[in-house]
Length: 400
Image (cartoon, rainbow, N blue to C red; front, side, top):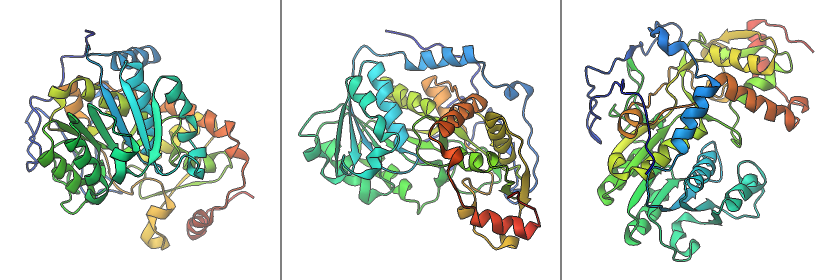
């Protein structure tokens, strides 16, 4: 049996209860940020937290996370969404499980012949098949029919956002003898707080669809785990995040950032998300009845993200700030990230699973920019109607 080696200097003394009101160990330092401080706030970070992993360290950590830690290999079913940024989680998770010797079937919502399947990560599913995995398509509500009565040890639902969508999968899994149920939820269900980062056990929005799913899983399954991701990066992701910045930087356009640009967010490489999920499969007892923030252990400001994208592209950047209300635009439509501090930490995964992250934004953004250029997006005509409205209100000129 292989062994995962990790630092003994972890900060968590014990994980919070499954659905308790927020209570934090005094050993868990938190950053204090005012909810009204989207435009200005202070943050204290120790010097040791300001260094990105070196390539050699990053390789070593990745190797540790991929190493099979259990002699018993599992049969895993991944119910995968066919849209949004989460689809790439199932792709990476399948490949990592297969690399660790497990059997994998990935069920993607919809039809194999649909236009969506021509886009990443679906157009790379041959990598799963060549590694020994199985790919099927269909309706998760009829999951038993789609998989042809096959038996599984573990099921991951990486598709549903509410109980109506996930309940059929949960009920089928329970009745079919599945031993462990995993669910991709969202860190977006945390309530606004004056203390950041969000940690496992913090209060969530009671009316959020994911919350209903989480509670039902805990009621039905004996062995389960919940994962709450934020933003992610990685080859095969088909949701525009870093591309939004590249579109403007390569065309020498100003990059309009809402607020002060000092808002903190969290961006993780999807390989870190999949390694966390794999550890839960290989350590089911440790992961049981736990909630894990499926995120990087680093935060980045919105201005910092802009500068890192410019660095990856090898271009200068002109950042301009604006007040969405003053301009009269919806920030959700004008910008790919939330216009607020939105930052969780993976404390439970580090303490309970021995997980270690390998996300390195400067390197990861360079990889994504190379792919951006490879597909020719830097040369495609793009309109910037909302940007133009913002820049006009600010009286910022735009080069023709």
